Length: 312
Image 1 (cartoon, rainbow, N blue to C red):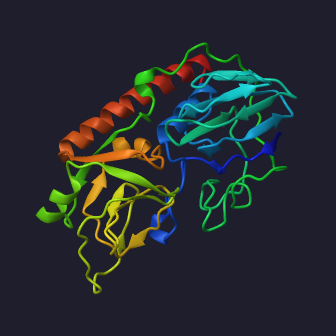
Image 2 (cartoon, rainbow, N blue to C red):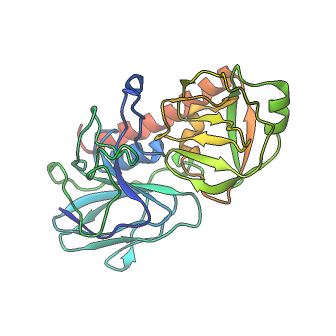
C-alpha cells in the first residue's frame, strides 16, 4: 500500500486512457504516453498499466510494502529516504521507505509506475482520472494527503540494470518546435500568422489544453457547427489566443482548428509548461507517418528487451 504524505501540485492516477470518444467521453490518460510506456516496461508491466502522473511538483509517498518503482518523464528531483532516486530505471523500494518528489526546472510531467499497476475506479475500460467529470482513478480527483493506494501484486523480480536511452526520452527543453499538419480551416492568412514565429505558453495550461499568449486574427462565424476534436488540434477561440488540446480536451468544439500537432510530438506537447516558447512547422502527412513509425520502433524495441528480462 502507498500512503500519500504530500500530494504535490496535481497528482492523478492515469493509464492509457479511454477509447469512447464517440460517446462524448474525453480520452484522458497520461499526457506523456512515451514516459508512461517506458516506466511500465521498466517494472515489467503492460504498457497501459495505471500509475501516477504528477505535474510541476511531485508527491511524497510512503511505501507500506516492498515494491518495484520507476519514474520517467521530466527531470524531477526525487529522493528515497533522503538519498537520490534515479529516474529512467527500475528501483526496489522496501516497506517503510519514503519517496519524495519535488519540482522540475524543465518540462511539466512525469509518470511513476509500480510493478503490478495501481488499482482505482474503472470507468469505460480505464481507471484514468477525469478531473472535470470527477470519475476514475482515486474518486475522480487529484490525490490528497492521507490517500492510500493499492496495486495488483506480481511475483517479485530483480530490476534490470539498464537505463532508458536518452534518444527515447521525450524532449523537454525549450524552445519547442512542434510539427503540425494544416486542416481545411487553414487559410493563407492564418498560416502566415501562426508559422515561423515563436509563441509563449501562458499560465492557463492544464490537462485539457495549453493556451498561448500571442493573438492571431481568428475568424469568427457564429453559425459554425460543432465538430469533433482530438488531442493535438490547435483551436482558435474568438480572442485569437491559440489553445493546444491535451488528453482531457472535450470531444467536440465550435472554434476553428487550422493546425494539428503530429502524433509523434504529442508527448512533447504534454510537457509544455508556462513560459515555454513554441514554434510550429508544417510537415507533410508522409513525414508525420515516418516520424511516428520511427518513434514506435524505438519504444517497441525497448519494451521487447525489458519483456525478455522479466521472462514475458
